[in-house]
Image (cartoon, rainbow, N blue to C red; front, side, top):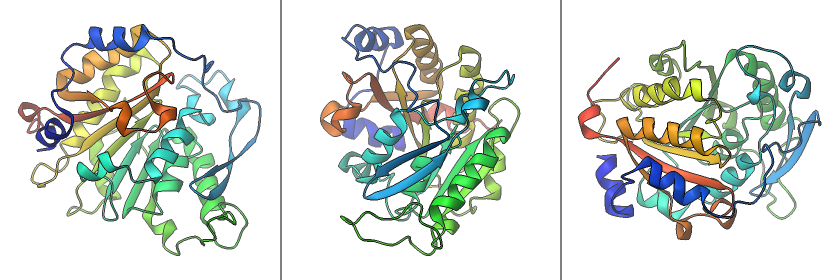
Length: 294
């Protein structure tokens, strides 16, 4: 089971959400402001793992009065940091057997940029980007612009000199998935029944307290999608440390369904260590919860 493997590699899980919150927020946390890369620009140019990406975003949508939220309209600072670390295929994730050439990764709340998916889909079997419907137009445009071999986007830098894999578009899938209204079963339309879901990724998704319950429930439901699979899904949650109350609310609810570990500083890039203003947690569904299908 994933929880046992995580325990073997990382030791005992977090026992108290309040203590974990205090430990993180009592540090001197660098100011990362709200966390936007640049909320005023229509296009963000960025290099990750030797490839350049041009990512469209929508400052106008971010500042609109859309009731369902607008945070997916722009790129957030933690995203390229996480994409860079994951692109190195960290030894920790190799030991946990969740990131490898045959892996299937699902991301919740990927935003319009889809950057982590663009980066990792070069290295894994399948990467599924999900978010609300309003994000899909920009997301699909960014994927097309940065994976097409006939344009200049996502070009390899001179340092790397590699071309786009010809099957990149086939590895990278998109799907609307609303945590409040949609079913985790919808993922079966883009993931083959015989494929396990190795890694479930959340990157800066914890921002509204009213979304905590549906977000955690969606995570749990996705982890139950393959009850007969010999491999259980590992959840990764990367986030900026903003509100201690929202963080504790989320962690407490997550720990009701999952065993949770903080990624050790020695196993993660300097930019994502616990003193950086960001934090990365790993989680595995509790064995007693694994058979509960909703």
